[in-house]
Length: 286
Ligand code: AMP
Image (cartoon, rainbow, N blue to C red; front, side, top):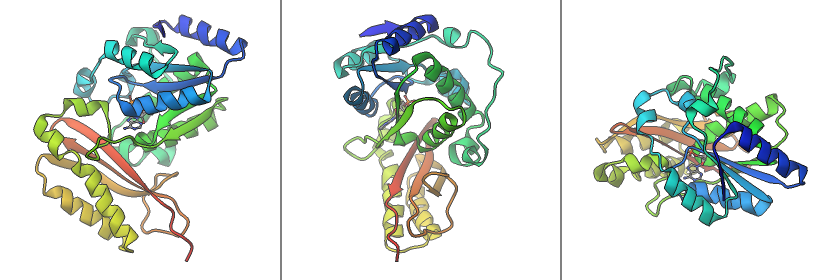
């Protein structure tokens, strides 16, 4: 596996690959890789000639200095995992290399970012859009792979690709979970054993809300049931739990036939902030 750190090296390398007629699959990550990331690498391998993975803890998308400082950085182990998964190129620039010039451009995704992650993490999606735009220009992928884990991020990037006419296909893959249901996340490494033990309750809460909705409860009742369940775990502090349209991410007051809906939440376990979501199958027309 080729490892590159400079913008000029990755630019030249992917340009050469394109000239050779190779299809490039791209998986952007912040490292501390787990099976969720590797599922994206394997998908990229299957559908492309060359897989490029970036590992970059992007300072521009953190709205909390401690979260940035304490984000796990494990480049050596990441490189080994990527090599074993069949990744061809690892691009791991330093923040100084990535942001040689202070960026002045800012993005506004309108109502897409006024809810959930955008509402609770000011500037987060601006930083995401900035780094993803830079990476798309540098890597020039034919396909870029993202996880449903970050559902709102995917919606933002879909809008970005559409608005800026990036010539690539976006692919979204399902959430990979631990055996007890906890969504895999690099931040799980920061949980204490006690926090780790209750963390799967987040997924249980989503399942409780889902079961309620499937039993024809109202959105409000479903949310209340999940919130009440989580309230019994003092280690956990729920930030939001929303029932939203799966594309527009706007809260839905009640389910409508044919509408794809997502249950989304964010919660703190101590200082560690976790997110999770569940897609509900569209209701059949009645
Ligand atoms: P991150 O390193 O957290 O920025 O994630 C990089 C990519 O991996 C994003 O597209 C995430 O949505 C995706 N991802 C993170 N966790 C999971 C998971 N548990 N299952 C599937 N994809 C994931």
